[in-house]
Length: 362
Image (tube, rainbow, N blue to C red):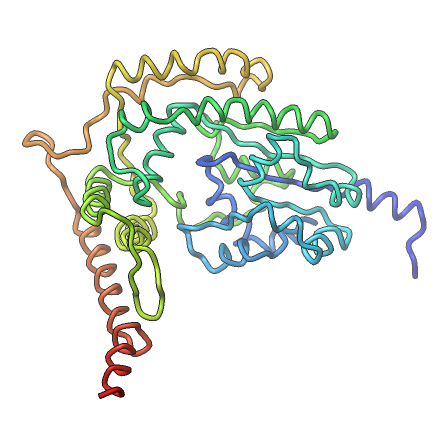
């Protein structure tokens, strides 16, 4: 039996499209793993987190990757049909949407007619806090191997981020989207509680993850080991682990950073600091953009230049401040190294197959 017009209107009026868009380094991986792990709980509350390759990866519990989908997914016809069909509300999560939205590109134009309202969830982060986290991520991946001072002096991307945040605010206003902004640097409640509130769920509707962090930062000793390994590898080159071809930097990341972050997810990271001169120059560089942006933000989300990013312990070891690894860290590293060595020796691996092929030619 077809629903009456009044019933259809009542159903439609309750339907919301929630779109979480980051920006980068604001807990997106944790949020995505949380949503993926709570598929049943979300459905019980009339909310759906649709499957795509990224959410499926998050459901497979790879905490280092999360479920960060790309903007390209929104252009797929089958994904559009999946999201817009049915009567429930839907939550999407992809921090990469921060960039096209900031440039005014409405990738939701075909989606929003199926929903009574669209609510964009934007997390931002204080400049020095963000840059410190981005520096550590670049070091993990071998994209940068110099000091935090060098990184801040050579990069001006956060000034661009300030403009992009303003662009997202304007984009939402122009398209009639609700916008909820939270400052990841100064959340007043655990991230799980914040997400429940933003998604308009009852308290404790989401089952908490067994870990407090996903893709955490590194301790000083872990960071130094990763940095030295990347430096010794030098130029990025192709290698084979088992039957898989990958870049040397990817292998180095999996060997050290990923192993530590997955094996010891709740270990507290150490924070690299800036020299006084670089800290002052960075603050001066950011001041004008922050002054322009803050009046557009809710009071609790406004950006601040935190003093805590200045003068932290250096990464390099000294007699007074040596590197220290716990037994748990050594155990994780040993397991990671053993897995890499086993991968090289597997029968389906490149080198065994090469030896077998050479033997057949003799």
